[in-house]
Amino acid sequence: MGDSRATRSQRKLYDEASGWALKHREGGRAGTDDADFMRWLEANPDGRRVYEIAERLMVEAPMAIGSDQALREFRTDSRPRIKPIVAVALALFLSGSLFVGLDGPMRLRADAIAGTEISPTLTLADGTTVQLNASSAIAEDYNDSRRTVRLLRGQAFFDVAPDAARPFTVEAGQVRVTALGTAFDVRRGETETDVTVTHNAVRVEIEDGAAGPIRIGQNEQAVIDHETPKVHRRATDGDLALAWRRGRLVVDDAPLAYVIEEMDRHFSGRILIAGGVLAQRRVSGTIAIADTDASLEFLKQSLGLGVTRLGPLIVIHG
Image 1 (cartoon, rainbow, N blue to C red):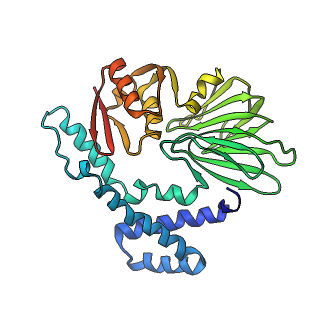
Image 2 (cartoon, rainbow, N blue to C red):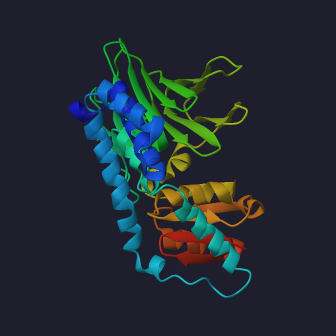
Image 3 (cartoon, one colour):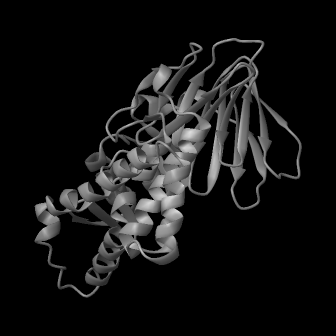
């Protein structure tokens, strides 16, 4: 990534530019918003350029959706059980901002984003190597006294280069993971953050958490619940926990919601579950997570689920 990585101030500018682009797209430029926008441009010399990038991404979104023939020609199934499921799912998929749908805000914030079909390995400025899971994103913030990588989305495995003068820390939301000369994995999920150590140890801290720092050793995993937030510590098999690096997902009595979240990383559209009860169905086995068709077939055979496809949308139902 080298010289192309964004600084903290640049990422702040990107966030603000995407916010203005969304506001203007939804409500137009009028009244106090327009005056505030002009003041923002005057205060940020690069603001106009970054804002125009955000606007271009939003223009590309309807073109991308319009190019999908299945989506343009879709007619809902006449069967009463499936029709409302698909109709609601389609509404959810299309009702959000098109800019967000094209991943615009994340593109402006991140230094590296993995695609849906690859898990790239990157080398950072200090020699640390990072392998990103599909659809994952990171931002790098190095200076003379520290090395910080922000896991903005998804999952990443870190093999940290030694540097006694500059500690290496990964930030994933409220969770901070500091390497103690180590290799480790961080997964930032929708409901929890998982930290798995494969070599040496890390120190895990939670912002505003009641508990102090926790040391997680080799072949251990820390699971941090986002709502509590509490840290659950357990022994784990590193090879199985990191099977995603080989295109596999190994689960033992995991909720269906977790499996779908992992499948969604490898799918260019969106996979939705029709109902909260269904989302808690339990799944066990080894899944070829990088192969969406094979993963869906596994779920159909093992849980007897139904699958409805609609262009870039897949709905899982009972």
